[in-house]
Amino acid sequence: MLKPEHVQPEIRLAVMEYLINRLYAAEFAANGMSVEQIKAAHDEMLKEAALEPWPAKEPALNDLVSAEYVACLERMLQSQQALLEEMYRRARG
Image (cartoon, rainbow, N blue to C red; front, side):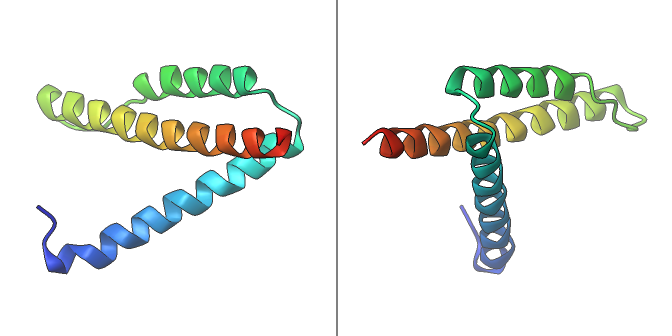
C-alpha cells in the first residue's frame, strides 16, 4: 500500500514516465514509424536491457536488480506502445 510520504515521489516518477512516453510517441510518429517497427525497436531495447551489467557484489542482488530493471522498462514500453496505438487510432479517425 502506498504511504502518504511516498505519494509525491511516486507521482513525480509517474509524470516523468508520462512525459517521456509522450516525447517518444511524438518522435516515432514524426518519423513515420509503424506500430510494427516500434514493437521491434521495443523488443530490441528489452533484449539489450537484459544484458545490462550491474555492479552488485552478490549474484542474487545482481539478478534482482536486473530483473526489476527489465520489468520496469517493459512496463514503460507497454505504456508507450498503448499511447502510440491510441494516437495512431485517433489519427486514422
